[in-house]
Length: 70
Image (tube, rainbow, N blue to C red):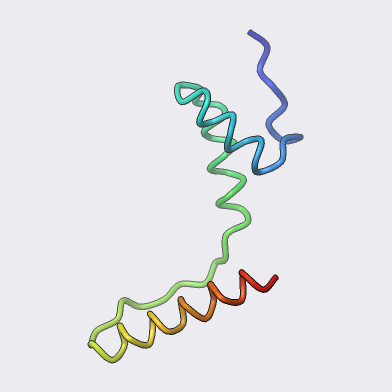
């Protein structure tokens, strides 16, 4: 079987291919590489108190609302 050109696939197409072909290691590596390369390098400390956990929950909700609006 000829391997598809994963680099020319959209994220949606690549994701669908990986789901349809779960044993295809090359597709999975392409999927992980694509999403890892586009991920934010920003890291965060683990919340250490209930107040910090609540703050993180608020920030997540705000981010989700921003994504809905865009």
